[in-house]
Length: 199
Image 1: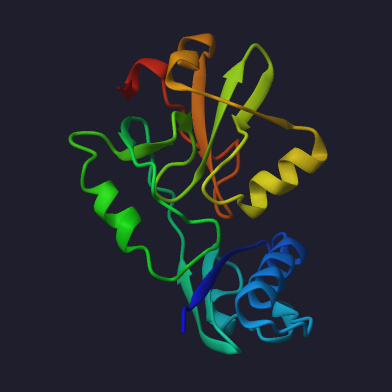
Image 2: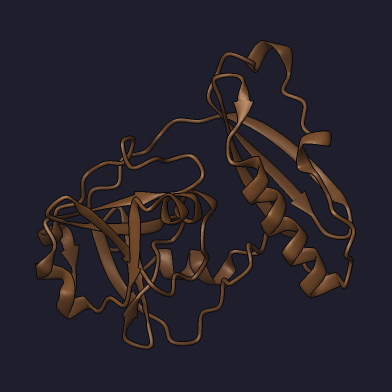
């Protein structure tokens, strides 16, 4: 049986966007396991006392039930360059624990910090995060990411980001790119200059 993960940000004494994580977890369980019970992750999460004032990466592994929960200190590793790689077969529409294919593509990054995956001609995600692009004072994200992250989902619903179809030929239209995921906000993300996205 496949296992899946949720990676949740704990900061300032609370778990961020927990309702979006619950939604994705329950959609995944319903799709693969035909389980329609409504899991609530917050009932299973308990931060160790000595870590309560830290920023943590909480990793939940689950299948039919919760398999494991890990808490670790989080340090943002800057990403300032990307190597474009193409793969028309990759599927990461659910947050699988098995990242074999993503890890193999990551090995193609060359001298760059990470990769930017193009599928069927369209820009999708990096190896571990959604990507967004800035034009003037507006942010845009790929319309069809490999995985729609919880932070991206939140930003789109708040009107901070507009999803749009993006191809590599569109890159010169933008002034910068940034990556976002459950643990990295727009404000916390390093700037990626467009010239540092290697085609």
